[in-house]
Length: 300
Image 1 (tube, helix red, strand yellow):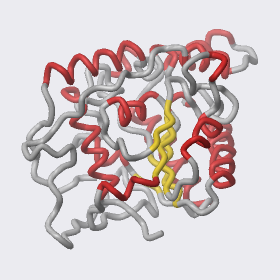
Image 2 (cartoon, helix red, strand yellow; image 1 turned 180 degrees about the vertical axis):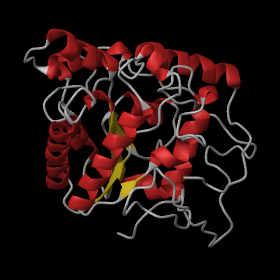
Image 3 (cartoon, rainbow, N blue to C red; image 1 turned 45 degrees about the vertical axis):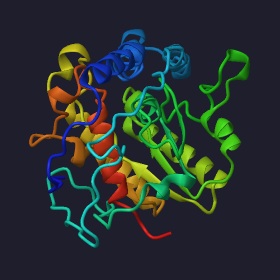
Image 4 (tube, helix red, strand yellow; image 1 turned 45 degrees about the horizontal axis):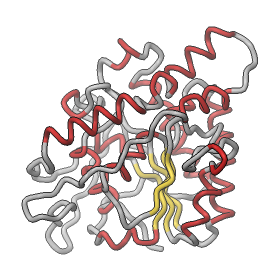
């Protein structure tokens, strides 16, 4: 969606941001070649039944982005300048709009995320690595997909300590808000199987957090040239699977957050200048992500 907002000055030191992004790209690259492309290439070349969790586990061994000093704005705050009190810009309809997606609302304070937990793959690791929402809990790792989120032990300091996302999240206690972004690692699956696995994860989340508001986030857009490196990744496929995720959220009566719209350019791609690999984001775009979450909430 086109968010009508004054362009803010970039936060943080550009060299530091570049170093951190390079670490994220080399260590994760959406799970290296294992995130999206690696899974599909392996699946296509074998042409036989194979446990996809094994391929995801390989990707999960990559180093998660290390913590970095948070970029700061001109005011010294990590958050963006708030809108005027009560100002809410309507979200225009676009070819990428999903039915029943959460509409723009008044901006909430950062304290809104005090009782939030985020689940996701390597894209979501940047929320923690760049200190975007330090007051929230975040359980994300390279290689996580809807197919493996419930069964593969991704989180832990050592192999012996590793747990699944939901098992690890129990240490953070009860939560009032849950944010989920999954999908990139599951694009090797047929869409029906993908959605079935996503639904199974939602069932488990709702069981663990019965009183929480569960937000389903779309996958983020990809760069226009991403297919040159990852031949089976395309804007069209991400849009198609995002639409299926939106339909799933409607089935469960859960709020759907269309991050794709707010992070895309005019043609529906991730801008080249904010993602050298066409997949991951710079700190500036993580803050744009946070701004979107702060201005797209539902009443609890």
